[in-house]
Length: 455
Image (cartoon, rainbow, N blue to C red; front, side, top):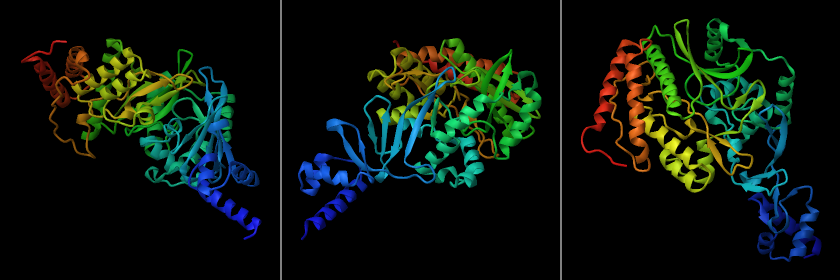
């Protein structure tokens, strides 16, 4: 067998090895049964096909993978609190579903999945489904969000990801769209005109074309920019169906309860989103000010608890356990961990059964080494949400003190009593649901009967 033929065989085998994932030089030497110099010569002859990742002993070799229409290299930028932009690093897509993330001036990292901080940007919920439906033909991606894979996420983010939650932007085109928008005069809604304007945005949202960003959450909503007292606020607005129907009346009751809960949390000294209720055209709308935005252009580095826990722990069990994990690892302060525990207990006592990891957010420091608890949001008594057009009867059975949050239970209990009392007395809420709130007040008060927990 000639030397040229042997060399070609080695090259073919090397490419096959790299097609299954990134490899180090020692791994290639062992698999090919050749020396280090031979591997380097082979890699040199394949320089147009093979990419070098990292430096020194941590160097790996891989084959890049083109994502349709956007290539294999994705610059990732962050928007500062003042609206300025700087590049954080570059993401390279590789064969075998791997990704190489190389922050500017730092050691790169190999991922076997779309990196958590990018995965967290994917469109979700009501607005995400509308985004997928309205942009599918334009971007050549499935119109059903459930059918998206990681490539579809990257295509969407690179082409139309200029206004995602948080402060990251993926790709040159989305960056240019952000910069173009920054140069234009903001189209803000005057706060005094919301009653007249919001119903039009509701109709757009229900038609499948909500304005603004692809924020998560299943509750129908839209995004808007509001001018109030000469200051700009980015807001998300949830809205009920028409209150002429039973399911609309129930959703309206839940939105009113959510605002009460947010106010209670704020009074307790735990951050919560600023909110306002607006009624128009037989709908109740809950407007909340976004905490990941500063003025017209500034942004904050927000990530969901789901993304953080997935990356560092991979449990996704409950908020109380997550608080303990993040506290013990030093990623969350003891004060914030206790606040997260309190929110979990309080949520249980106000029938918030929707305590999934996407309903808690964290603000990230520059290096992603630690996090701060973001303001609370999405805290209605979801036990009572309608099912399609039906209003099922529900039994409220709050849990007794939970291991891991015993110290928070008594305090959260007192504030939950305040919540149910306030809801039972709020005349904006339907008489039927006020009766439920009054019964729940008695149920929560009754939890103190019997042996007491001393902490």
